[in-house]
View (cartoon, rainbow, N blue to C red):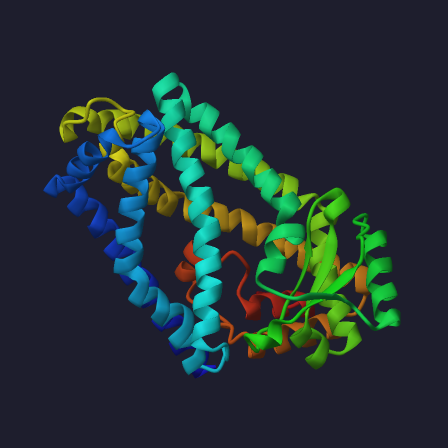
Length: 363
């Protein structure tokens, strides 16, 4: 797909530019002294240290958001519309972006406050922060289908009784019984299609995009869902949380070392000085890039296992291959990226590799 290759190349260029702009903004704050000036100005904020941290974080994040918005608009709205993936009006896209920014902003501010509260109270803040973030991941997974998804999509119960029973039976056989099957009005925004099994325990449910229902036969829908159920059958959420927890501990430990190394270099009052927030953000950004291939490598492994589960559970490789082909076309997938790009950036095996594995061919 020549269009797919060009689309993904442009997305990568835009993402790289946004990353460079973010890093440049953080460097500028550190070397210009603006970060320290903002921290001094916020010293009298209500709430003491909590209020000062909040004021610094909100100012820095607000300016960063304004700087990167043109790139975010280009990558998130203009480019997908240019390639026919998105048909959501700009006003509706901006509304979704505002909701997402409010949600992530609230969570991000809470995370910053927790980190700086721990920095003020214990030299082992990095270990406590990893534990708090682990608990937060668990909580978000539990409430995702109940509180978060409905903010962006209208969910309705699947009307096709036969298909609903077929999918719920498949979920029960996989050891992941679901409360029901809901349909998201994805076609209101995009042509892309997908399915998911979201939630944990009593909140677990099957979500299907209406684009999937409209354009895929039942056998292929079952195959797509079987892949998602494979993650539950293999306890991949727990495995992913364990891996993410280990990476978080390592990341925060290294961040502690680098943050403390920068105290005298940057003229900070201590590790808990809010003027060091740009440095901490820069350190975490760099460490995130370093650990990205590790996390993606683990993700590709469990995705291959989920593919194998789907093939075994349905016994229908033709349906799996058909679903992959159709998803690749609708979602404008890059069928076979370079091996380096796949290793570093891809959380799933490349489409052609998944299809070849389903056919029993060398990938």
